[in-house]
Image 1 (cartoon, one colour):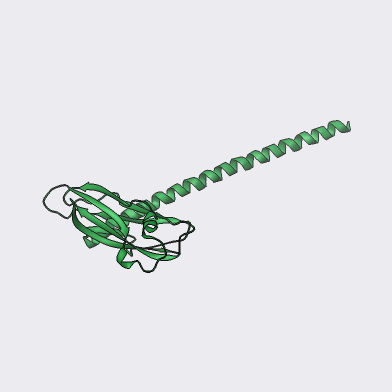
Image 2 (image 1 turned 90 degrees about the vertical axis):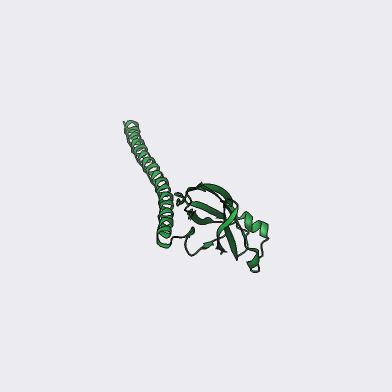
Length: 183
């Protein structure tokens, strides 16, 4: 009689344990799904904010080239990535479509404050180092171009100035500088 009672208590204990473990498993899956979806939404939100800020800068200032953040200063820690966005407006009134090319390079005139070779500093640009696109008269890039840096753990702490140069059909159109501070 005792062994039957012990077997019954063990069966009930096992069932309760299984129910609790399944509840924890379902809750864990739910939480992981929430974390990933909120991360994706945050990235989409940031992209949307960059686009709206760039559109505001075009509307307010009427410039050919706008950069976000408008301070043109980026601070990144070692082992992290980040960057900036920019957009271009075709200010020509001739009605012609123009081809624009852009390049981002290290400003050699302001290169005294960093112990990293120029080639390595240019290799910090992970995405968006250069490219081309076409714009009609009065049009601007609806989707900003994102330039992304990746700073390795071994990068020295310093300030690097990059030059964003924009050409229209091969001729100079506009340029600006962007400062990257490695902390």
